[in-house]
Image 1 (spheres, rainbow, N blue to C red):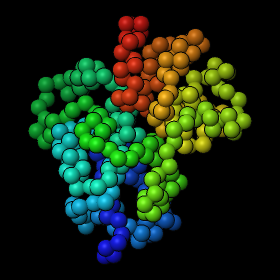
Image 2 (cartoon, helix red, strand yellow):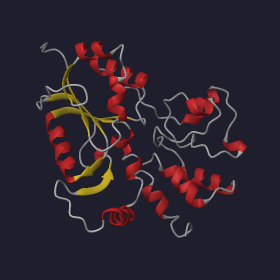
Image 3 (cartoon, rainbow, N blue to C red):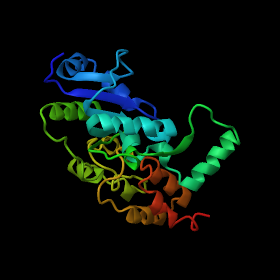
Length: 259
């Protein structure tokens, strides 16, 4: 094994595994990926996994069990750089959209007083709730080009590209008509860019799958949609779907209003 190659581990916590699967979908580039780096661990594609020291760990999925907390802390100890890979790892994903009380109520409805013997479940949270995270790669799932750009840059020792602006900016560059002006509940003002505004390009509203944009104004979006006649609970669900834990506190102020 070439000692100059970066040692990389790819790990999956709770999620649909779509981001890890995305790497395997890089069919034409997959051999080059494995030749360019020393992939130490990647359960989806190899059986000879090594749990040693790492230069970079890509962690997909949210933390949803006590076992995953311990696994995540172990990864952090072994890796020089930890990357929150995808929306579940970055913000908690769809499974983290409920508040703590709401999560407990839903869990009780489904499982009742059943005792878990394998591992104790916890409310889903992003990985930075338990460890320090060095880099974030959003998306649900992460896009192929996005991953390849990231992978190429880190191999060269360059920081990955950030996506600080909202989808609305690219949407305007693409000369699309504003769907909000047509009364369609689009989340472009709140969502991190990087997708090229692919949904509005096809006259479909942004659903927020790249997660919250830096400096976004959820209050303005909330009241704009409310003024356009959308149901409060529907607004909450739409805005919460891909924001994970990041908008939980924001919606606390509207709980009484939605009842």
